[in-house]
Length: 282
Ligand SMILES: [Zn+2]
Image (cartoon, rainbow, N blue to C red; front, side):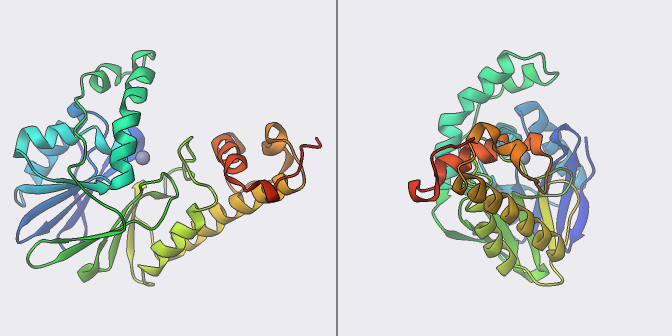
């Protein structure tokens, strides 16, 4: 259970302990849009209960900011509660969830995580309505802009802009309670550019809701953009100097804890064009 807190006029965020994950509700004349659904059907049912307790209307659409299960595996609970509502996502998020959900289940099946049974009992509900660059959701008295700013945390990230209140839901392109998460599906060189697009959608007064943690301002996003930019340039520099991928993490200073950057380095080395790499010398 978590309480929804109003962060802008008729926009509420609830912060769930598991993964410190944010779920957002945006209300309009045509109902409620829920952005991200948490990490299992059981967890999603708790979100549904919290939305009902908030008492501001019926959910008419779901948005998934990207394919990761802590944002999508609760989709089934919204189907159970509200029927066949549309689930919006970027087209790559659909493809990645369709191919990646089984790996999540395998990982949990082999673990003794307290959420293991809930994850395994979840029927994955795939996004039904996808787009490639931009989609507008018309809620009657307000619109939501879903924008794919390019690849970053995943290949299929989207951000949600609520223009009438200058609010932006950033998904995991921005994280407040931990360092940005570089997974084996991340795009370290493109992430800073995606954040440039995100910044172009904000003002000095914007409220930005990260995928995990407390709402932040534009200055925070600028800072995180600089840091993911340093990660990218450091990887480029190491590869250009012929440092082997296995020694790269230890060979540089990083703006985030190095233990979280193994995938960033591996992905970065894979994604660099051959001309920017030297034969490993060390
Ligand atoms: Zn996440």
